[in-house]
Image 1 (cartoon, rainbow, N blue to C red):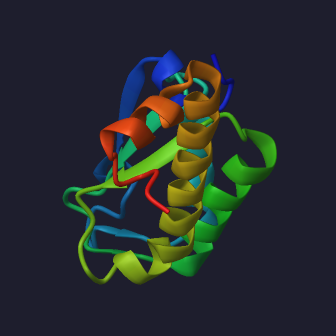
Image 2: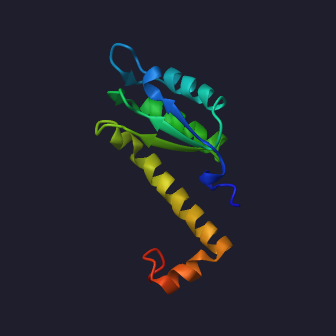
Image 3: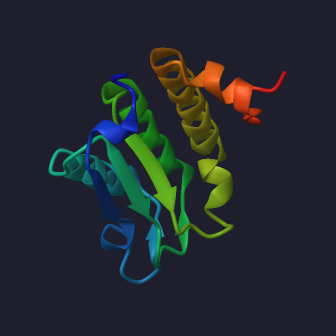
Length: 130
């Protein structure tokens, strides 16, 4: 199995509203990001959903610290943002793009390892059409 394959571990969820400011419902500081980072060690698995439910806004300081740390120090962890609003989305675009690249790479590696791509091409799978 590919070590970067997120399916090998349990899925965990971090409810980010627990880290947000109680008055503004915002994630706007490096301190908040570091609190989330500290909680990563208490989660099982390498696929961790970041539930933004109830979070009204986030700052670049928060997202850069959180995602930057994970990319540098915990490359086997997949942070998957969920339930975010449109004001938060622009801050997540870079990370979402990297996540999609990792998914594509893991899919390609799994295809090669299992021989799926050859069978998929025979079946006309859209992922393998040229």
